Each structure stands twice: as structure tokens, then as C-alpha cells.
Image (cartoon, rainbow, N blue to C red; front, side, top):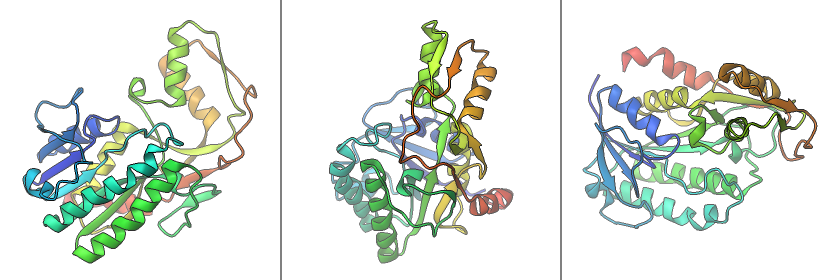
Length: 282
């Protein structure tokens, strides 16, 4: 395997820390980029900077990487934060400056929230109608980066993630809230019907999919990083309780299901399967 020079932005984030480690374990040279560093693998080269600096020479500043994996995103757990929209031009300028500097391979983290309300499997041709500022911003950046990559002749991969869990103390999911309630000694946890079905993926599995996808260039464009299997929220949370040996019980029906949540949404895993099946050739 050819050793590559890889930049990971948002390296200290929930997903970023795992991606950095995955690339390092694969033997690549990693430049971890963030405004602060928490629990970053010590093997990584650290570059303290903001992606919003609008540095025209950022490609040179990042040591002319072969690949940039752009994970940096503020307020990712707060989908209706107005920062998603105000930050959008900063993300665009960062990627534009990289491509103008000479970058030939850009990878960006996407989200199922670009899709909006949808029932069934999601692939690269599924229409998007985001219903949150987060989804709108991600979708707009995706459309912009696709055009930029064509304009500058760069490889472009948009990695669309679904319902990520694992390392739950570091995120803001329902699993985190259950952990906190268990630690507080609460006996019951107010819950929805639990019937909505999602595509769950552990953050370590997601990091592996991101890393293996990024170092190859046969499969490009929108790629679902997913399990490809819909599982009800109730069933997955009950499994989580068993895995953790928690005593807390779910109180089903205490909260109504949100009308804008899809009854069942999951990723089409055709492209990621193709990548993983050929990983030994990379």
C-alpha cells in the first residue's frame, strides 16, 4: 500500500479522533487539524488552525497533502443552530483555496439530514429536501463541492453518515442521555414509541469506512457510510441497555414521535460494499 499524506480537519471531534487513529494504523502520514486537541493519537502531526481563516495558501500550509478529509463542523449535534448557515461560506472558501492551491483529492463528511423526510433506502440519486439548518448547509456544501471538483479536476467523495453511536460519552445522542440518566441513578427514561427505523453504525466502523474509502479513487461521488440495515430505535436502545448492563427502563410513549422524522430511513450500501470488498487491493 502506498503511504499517503492525509489531512484530517476536525481531528479532535467525535468522529475525527477515530478517523485519525484509523489512518495511522494503516501506515499513512496524518496531519490532524483543529483549533484545540483532545485525545488525539500522539503519532499524528498536529496543526492548530481554523478552517475559517480563509488562507489562500492553506494547501502549502498543510504541507501539500495527497488527500484532505474535511470533518470539521461546528454545532453538529444542534441541527437548528444558525451557525450552520453562517459558517457555510467558510467551508466553501477553505475547500476552494485547497483546490486552487493544487489539491487533487477532497473528501467531505455528509449526513442523512441532507435528505429530509424520506421513507426507504437512500442512494446517490435520492432527492434532497433538508428540514434543518444543519441539513440545508450540508446539502448546499455538497452541491458546491461537486461543482468545484469538476472545475479543478479533483477526485471528490461525499461520505454520507447515518445514525452514529459508540464512544457515547463524547456525543450528544439519546445513548449519551441514557448513560447520564443511568449514572444519576434514575430508574426510568422517558421515550418515544421507538418504532422509527434508522441505519445505525458504530463510530469505529464508520471511521474504518471513511479511511478505506478515502485512500481509493475507483468509487467516487456520494458514498453512504452505513450498515445498509434499518433497525428500530427501540430495539437498538434495548440492545444498548443489555450491552452496558444498565438497570434503567424505557418508558415508551412518553414523548410523541416527531412528525418530521422518517418512519424508516437507511443507506444503500452498494458502493461501500464494493469498496470494502476490494480493500486488500488498495
